[in-house]
Length: 313
Image (tube, rainbow, N blue to C red; front, side):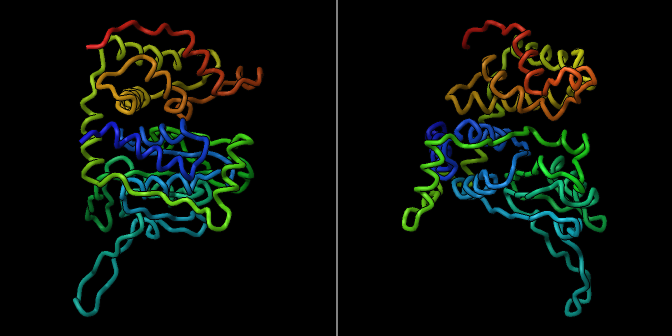
């Protein structure tokens, strides 16, 4: 079985309904293959939910969605134990988190207590209820969304939880031509369906292949240099954590796999650098005074670190 070809087919299927955003689709797929979670930060109506459901269909995964609101409780996500009179015992009722792909819509609109309910499951792949741990089915990925505009009255995710997401992405507006294709596809009789091209077993095999992708020592040093550069930048008050470097390694390996290679090149690291690191740094006062944004600062860091020259194995 050609797993590289299967990966390309997954991207093509998702691109049927998320038109003109192949680079976003690739990065989300990289995170899934790398065993990470995704935070999509953008305005409503750009296809965040469509993206998640399309991936679940293309990969044959069980998908659950929770629309987070201020009254959502942790037990509404993880589940709860209740007394069963017939069995005369407490019985656990699993929540929607027990799936393969969990879509947390507008995660910043719920309480910190409900947000923190995701911490254990995102980090360890299990849920603890009443002192009992329940393992999640594999694979397991969280795709969370939040709206950056109109954030008054919402609960911004703390750095500890932001760090659990492997990447943070923005989808952005479509081009004029792509928006025309979207309108045509939504007309009556023109609805596009996403076909399943992967099984869970195939996806798990692909994840194993990503884990075995070779990373040269020079590329590892390149990653370390980039991460350290965020900690010594005059415009950043706080640099990336070590987890940022680990996630860079994993995402670069997944990008190499999607490119049909079993080894990482520096360009793989550069491709995912900003998406992996942007939510792990805090802007300093100097950056705000000069009206700099994270993307520009990270682009300057990337440009300022020389890429190593390596040859294929």
